[in-house]
Amino acid sequence: MKKFIRENSLSLFFIALFLLAVGFQALAGWQDFNNSQLSHNGDPIGFGRYLLSSEFGVAVLENWQSEYLQFTLYVVATVWLLQRGSPESKELDNPGGESDKEQKIGPHADESSPRWARVGGIRTWIYSNSLLLVMGAIWFLSWFGQSITGRVAYNEERFDHHQAGLSYVEYLGSADFWERTLQNWQSEFLAVGSMAILAVYLRQRGSPESKPVGAAHEHTGVTG
Image (spheres, rainbow, N blue to C red):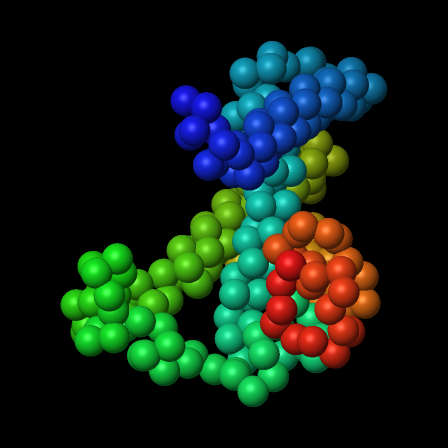
């Protein structure tokens, strides 16, 4: 058990933080929702019902979709795009998908290579792009879930004000949907861009996200 925890401590740490954060978000959201209900002469709801509500669903999914969009774009953008001096970038003379030899694909694979890297054909292509495919799929599903739950929540508010609800297509073109979406996208793009630039000049000793403390600013694709 100690070995398992040590070898998986990074993922376990963030899973624990995620569970704590989403749990406290649910409690805070439930209290806020019931306070709003009471202020509008409505009836409060139970915690279990809140967890299944569109209000909680859209609050969670609008953040998930933006996070996975960030990583999806980052995975594909860093194949071709470069940033001089950043450890977040590949070396300046090595853009693109690289050769089969460099990637240990097909006949260049060794005994420790995953099977789908050795077999060739469509399976190797899928495995070669599996991170992008899975990240992109999670982003799309989260975005789709946000659009569904967001429409339900938005229409519930319109019904409370005796207004007609919007169809799904109408909601996709609404200001509410794009305000929810873009307020998350802009923060994710800023965070990734800041990391790429700040890592050129700033250091964190021992972190693989940073260059060695003594590395020159212009060194690119070097991690500590």
